[in-house]
Length: 250
Image 1 (tube, rainbow, N blue to C red):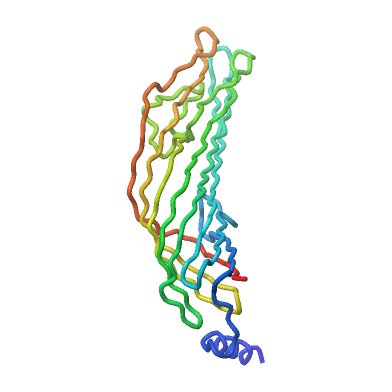
Image 2 (image 1 turned 60 degrees about the horizontal axis):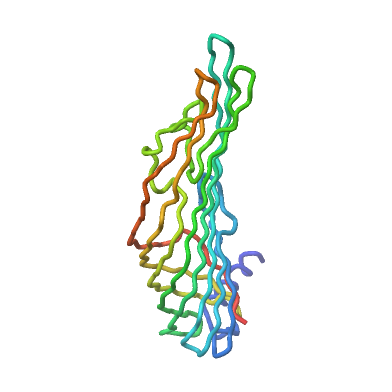
């Protein structure tokens, strides 16, 4: 019985005439989520974006989407010194956030498939920081690096780091992006659909200045160094997001 039920499901899925579809038309509204089943920063991301569309016409739609992602890494050091043991612990955090608005032209609409092309423009923000505590000579000191995600292999046990060794991918930044997009939706049942999208993006981001605070083991004082260079990162790239788009058109 179970085999017959599965076979019937695929027959219905393959025959668009047996299941009523709600493909977009003038005045339609759709909402979708993007689910990433793959490892994202070492963890599986359940939800990393939402998108809304409003159809001015069967072939013309406005879109608004929000994307985000987070990463966190914790590590510690322990060293034996002449006067005792020095311990330190660090937490590096980063968050990606984009807000985009755009337009879609739905050039091919069949009974089940909807192909479109369009573009969008938006704001990009990458937050990053690394904070830590160093226990030295019985005193606890707060150390870290602002506007940077510092991994363990680049951090010293006292919280000092050569800021020039950090790549732009690890630094906080903000700016804008524009993108040309091509995508497709496959309607499985009524207004429910799955989709995929490919884009070519151009971005211009200003990299935030970094500040590093660390412990001077000789004077047992907090020292500070700054990254004084203004930087701007300009990139052009194709993007194929490894996620699944699930949406509903009303």
